[in-house]
Image 1 (cartoon, helix red, strand yellow):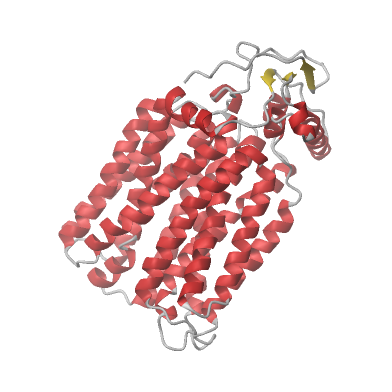
Image 2: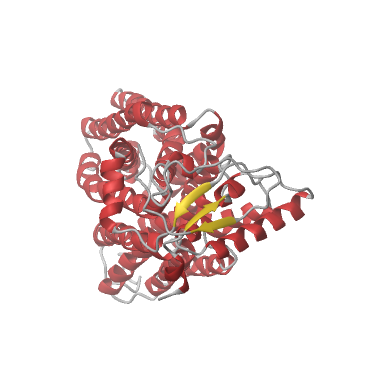
Length: 512
């Protein structure tokens, strides 16, 4: 039996969550953002590069016997399948074995798979390592989002989570521009350029892996798994660093939590918590992820075809247009993120979903009237995705904070897998066929479907969204290990830390 297992079964009173939430923003928090958040840039770079270099991979002399359809079809589907399976597989392990161990392992899986993709010499090798790259990325979504939300103070959690998830689009910009260089045979040989793009992803992942060594385990996770001494040491060190940076003493924390420590939470208890204890929140999570998945696929799966078939844009110039809408995507979370912490979750989530849906309906109508060209269509997409990106990022924030800590990573994984499967399987089957016909009416229908689902999700958010802004995670969703009715106000000037007691009865369940 490990020390952690031996320590479980105790009931302790702790103010560690309150100590983390009362911290001012500091250089230490920037370290967390850089160490954990930059992987989304790699994801955006990966997805965009593969889509843009599909034509080059299928050309003679690429060093790989593969068709363009196999790259955008089979390879893309395997990447999506890997991400879905990886999210569920790693998400369960993240809740059981800790955030840090898993966000190190999943990044290592991504790094290795990307590097091995670069040396592909046959189609099956390329397909295998596209799947494994997705497998690592899927695990990253669960491990990283849970760790970030548990380490970032409550007053900043919304904007930080949105910006980090929105940074995917910085990678998309880089991928678009990088693919232009990779496709230029005057600069790089046809069998070399695409390999270097994957190799660059592996190099960047190696740098991030080094930075992550300094990111601590979540003290909240340590507390419930019988490792409160480690949690105390980590939080004390964070407080020391913040006080040194700010040059002043921190205020006393307010609020305590009494928990009954447990080594692990069963899968059936996790499922029961999500679907029976919090059914309305589960409906909210479903709606947000499905809505954003279909809106994005309504636009992006026909992106190149619309530009080339309707506006006569050369295929090797579509990367410039994609870079523009990718910038619009990133600006949404960047500029609107703060409002999720001030105006509030319910208003901002519902309004970003509804606005993006209404604007896409308007774009569909303008397109049907024949009044748009390549530039104005791209401008319309930018307006739609400015709001949609903030809404989509808030979906990850929402499912991370509205369920108890013991289920956090698995909740993120489940809803992420659901949305990714809908977008990566149903989306291509539906939208690619519609936008590739070359008929205006079919493209308008694709836009309208995505817009309708986004508006529906916005209405669900208006009714069911949880006002989690500036609230402790333990207040938004009481931990399963919390002893019911035992929250206490902290004593001013008391020494922070944890106090242990004897065994207690298992805590009562949370209320939705």
